[in-house]
Amino acid sequence: MWNEYQNAIFLDLFSFLSCVFLLIRYSALRFSHPGVPYLFFHAHTVTSRLFALANGALPLFTGGVFWGVEPNEITRAALYLDGALWLVTFVWCVKPCEDPNATVDLRALRINPTIHRWMVYLSVLAGGYGLRYIYLPGYDPGLGNSEWGNSSYLLILPTWFGLGLLAHIYYYGANRITGFLISIYLGLMLMQGQFRFRIVTAVLMLVHIWVERRQRRWPSLSILLGLGILAVLFFPMKEIGLRLVRGDGIEAINASISDSVSDVYKGRAADQAFLDQAASAMTLSDVRGEKLWFGGYVPFLTLPIPRVWWPDKPSLLDSGAIAFVSSSSRPMKQAGMCPTYVGEAYIDFGVVGGVVAVPLVLAWILSWFSRKAARTPYDSVLRLTYAIVSVNLIQVYRDGITSLFLFTTVNMMPLFFLIIAHLVLRVFQARKGNNQVGFAFRATAASPSVVPGSSTYPN
Image (cartoon, rainbow, N blue to C red; front, side, top):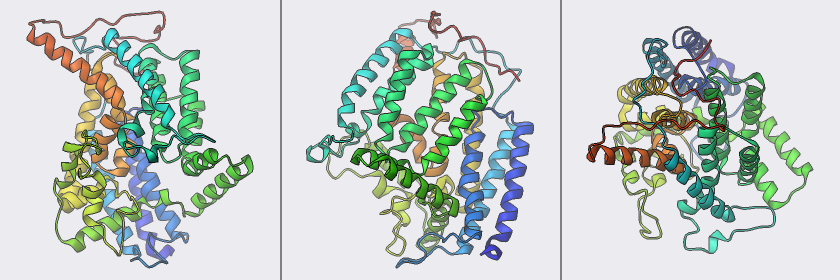
């Protein structure tokens, strides 16, 4: 197996290590830099997977009735992802995501304490009610018997509780009460298993807030260690949640964790096969012989309409890139697979448009967004918007560009509404002829560490 992947491994290691060096040297890496989740995404998706395959892990669909992914498909996908890594690194080095000489934009739209307070109240109350629809040991919410049982509105509603707490912590900082409540929320979300992103996103947002409020570039060593433990627990989290709800004992849970860690070590975990999934999607796109272009984005236009009101509403799963190329020989749609953002772009636009243009454009937009946000005070609406995007980038890189919309607007809906409310108020003020473009930050004893006028980061 080593001979089949040897060249790909050497090329990938050279690309990865070179790009890490370049980003550290020329792009001023920090925790909120879009390159940090990108490097993690690439190391997990490409580098570690190539080593696992070279050491005997089986490619996707191998050993069954389906068309197994072949080594040459995987090495081609690795080459394209290496190329995308070089392209985004080039953009972030030529146009760094931070300008240390930039002045603070004090005219930036600031968070209105009144709007913020009411949005927090609404989110916590609605989310607290939504917690009755989650699964707990010995408790079944009975969603299957409800007309709204499969509605995303009910599935997402419990997250409003945690997102309301995060909004409060973002503005005022954490205290014992919010710390206790967010811990309870994370514990409840752990029991849901299949919604692991709720835990990952919330934890990343907490770390982001901790770093930004203290004007640091990186989290502390203990926080980084905690993130490492979370990364390891991410793999068995589904099984842990299922067993907790079923009421299984500690021994069964420990056995699940042990088996999961063993599968990860041997490269057999399903969450380690994203490179294979990208390779399969690219091959199926070639077999189909046509591009999707922007067809996969059409269902977003009807996304807000509840399916209860429109049973035949087009779904993202049935109209996305994976559904477009999925076949009976490789049922990627039925398995809910992710082609990575490069694989999705390849299906949409081919090699030139997907593997070259999309990474370049995405990196440039993220660089511009990061620089713009860094020039505004901590309590600016733009800074909060970038924080929401930043903590979801790992999902975007893994799942596709469509997730940039899905995870920032749908799965973080209360924070999205908070931003929209400020933009609507600004338009309303402009129409009234009010020249004031921002709101003065209300300093309180609860937020002594916030420095509104700061946009630089100490070394």
